[in-house]
Amino acid sequence: MAEVTRVVDVPVQSLWAVIADGWTYAGWVVGASHIRRVDHIWPAVGSRVHHSVGTWPLTIDDTTEVLRVEPQRLIELKARAWPTGEAQVLIELDPVTADSTRVRMVEQAASGPAALLPKPLQDAMLIPRNRETLSRLTDLALRRSGG
Image (tube, rainbow, N blue to C red):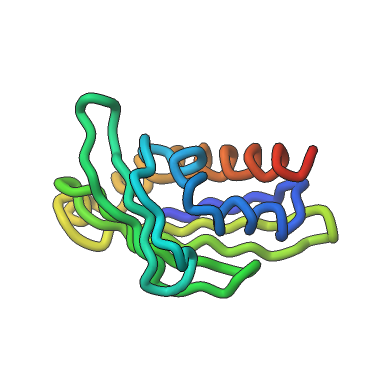
């Protein structure tokens, strides 16, 4: 499992506001390029963000589904990007102070060709990508909170 953790100077509520707005998904998830639709109950369990992956005109339409959610605390997702496969992603938010949060993101390939890659190779690809994802999430949360 590829794991990235960082402490950011953003309160949990600001980070959660970005995660809970499915329309922002392509703004912080590296690889997602366009949001086509967001289920009206997002981020409830079973809801989906319908997104495209890749660079136009070479995009693939797929979805990301909520598997588990504890608002302001965690969200677990099944991210699909066929033909590469599916990944299971966990994002946890843990307040450090009123104005800072420890963010932990864990991802692993769950099925498809990517799941056949050796774990060290998966980690080598996912860890830098997920560091950038957390950086983008933080930037969006800072912008929303006026920081």
